[in-house]
Structure formats: structure tokens, C-alpha cells
Length: 426
Image 1 (cartoon, rainbow, N blue to C red):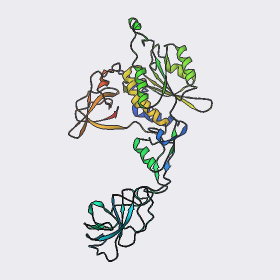
Image 2 (cartoon, one colour):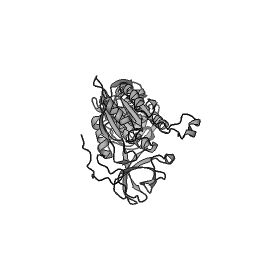
Image 3 (spheres, rainbow, N blue to C red):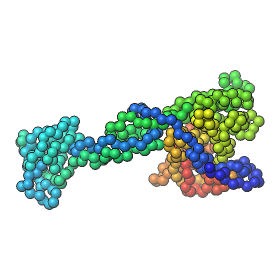
């Protein structure tokens, strides 16, 4: 296990207290601890964006047979055809036309010296063929004769059997996500079914008595709920279903709900209740129920009181708890960085979300914690650049109308305009 990074014992403000770990340490602990989900076999056309649970090797070669790369004529020059130079058939060489072959037909004819066969793209090359002459350089003399009008290299425009893929070649690896291109590639190689990791079963728990259920609640000081719609939409984008629960801010209600969910779900994702307030019950209740804390509190802004824990059931299976702070900006950051990492790891992809480097367009002051800022990306003279948006406080979300990146700003470091920073696409 990666040890927590050492901090000064003197409290110098929020984010400076001892025991906090870095974002990278937190992500490393997630990847270290997560056990893989179960597997299932799917038809290839139903496996888009799923993660492979096995390596896939080709049972065939590609192309399956030697074939024409163009519409033209398969030819076999005679020994008497004069070669302009080595391996080149001279222009104005003539051939006897004996038939044609289309894509999907079997090449049952064998070309003898001096013969040609009309052939179309993808059609099987007949025996005896040394070259395919594309139709643009062929002149038809009569119904039985053709002539090539340019010098032609031997073996031109022939796709050799197995030149792309050989039998037994590795096509895809376990943990690889199946993109549109990957599905097309596997389909071309004759793969019809794939073994993938199952989607984890996920419960989302929204805490907070302040969430309004109707317009009348606003008179009592309650607020709209952004977290549940945010999380539900995020999972819809991942093509994953979740069950959403709301729980009152009492230890009894939290205990009853978590005790039920930890027996039924692979991941419990909570919002709020993970800090040290009088009504923050998620962490103490989870620990009382037998969850083992993997980390709590990350040196980041927003989202410091991040919690990650595991509950090992009697059959050895595991329920993970990822506790996000309640402020919606912290939830948004946590979904893109931590929840994505957890989901990836459960499905065999043990890597943090893909990032990028870009030049910051302005100065940024230093902060005790690493900051994750919502920014906009642009290209300027082929350079990727990012700019901060206003309203970065953890309770604000209005800038998400324009944000397309989360950018990491190192702790305790002033960043100058033009300096390179790391970010995640959102």
C-alpha cells in the first residue's frame, strides 16, 4: 500500500492538516485494491464500449486468399514478353482475354502464359497470375485481346493472403475497451462473440435533508438537487444503469440503508456525509458496519473529504464504497476522476482516465492543495491551450455550460501563462 504523504503537524489552513494523500496516491490505491467483476459472453455487435476479459487471437488469416486490390485485369506474361528492366512488364504488351471473375466468386481458372482475366476489387486471384493491371492502363483491342499502356511491376495491386493478419496473431488484449473500430476489426477477422467483464451493480446514495422534493420545500430553506441528475446523466453517458436512493441525515437511516446495499451491490457511490460535521454519518456508519477504510481525505480542491472503503462479504466478494463530498462541483470532479477509475478497474482496465497536456493562457496563484479547475480548451496556431472559467467554488456549476476539461494545478505552486498543465477531457 502506498503510504500517506507526510504533512507538517502545524495546521496552516484547509488542506494542510496531516494525513492527507495526493490525488495520484489515491488513484494508485484504487487500482491496487479493486477486484475484477465477473465475466459474461456477448455477441460482438452488443459489446460496444465493454472491456474484454480475455485475449483474442485470430483463427484465420487476412486476407483469407490472395485478391485483387483494384478493378482491372489479372495477367500472366509470356516468357517472350520483353522486360524493360527487372520485374517490370513492358508497356504495349498484349494478352488474350479468357473471362472474368467478380468478388465472391471462386477463382477456378488458371492463367496460362500470355493470358488475362477481367477481375474486380476483392476478387480471388486465379492461379498463374503474376500481376494485376488496373483498368486505367488497359486498352481493349477486341473482345479477346487487351494491351497495357504503361510499364507494370510484377505483383502490382495484389493483396497477398495473410499480409494483414496471420493465424494465431493477437488481435485484442484483456482489459481493452471495444470501440467502434475494434468491433469492426474483430468482425472482419470472423470473431462473433467476446468474453467481457460484467457491468458492476451500482447504488447511488444521495444524503442531505436540505434537498427539496417540491416547490413548497423552498420556503423551508431547502434547495434543488443537482447531484442525483448529475450522477444519473454521467452513468447514462457510460451506458450503465444505477439505482438511486435518498437517505435522511440520521445515523439510523444511513445504517439501515448501507447494511442492505452492501449485500446487493458491487459499488455504493455516496454524495455528502463524509466530512466531520455533526450530520456526516456515511464514514462512521460504514466503519461500524465493517467497511475497511482504504483512504480518507485527499489533498485536492474541490473534494478533500473523499472516502474509499471496501466491505468483504462472507462469500469473499467485495462491495466498494466511494464517498464523494456533497458539493456538486466536488461530485462532478469525483465522477470524472475517481468514479471513472473505479469503473475501469472493476472491468479490467487498470489505468487512470486519459489526459492531455496544454498551455495555460494566464497566471494562477498558488494554493495549499492541488486544484482541479473547470476550464475551456482551444487551439491556437496548432497549440492546445486551456483557460480557467469563473465561478470555481465547489457549490457552483454554472460554468459547466462552457467547460470541456478538468485541469490539475499542483499544490503550492504559482503557474505562469504559457506553462504546461495536465488535464482530463470531460
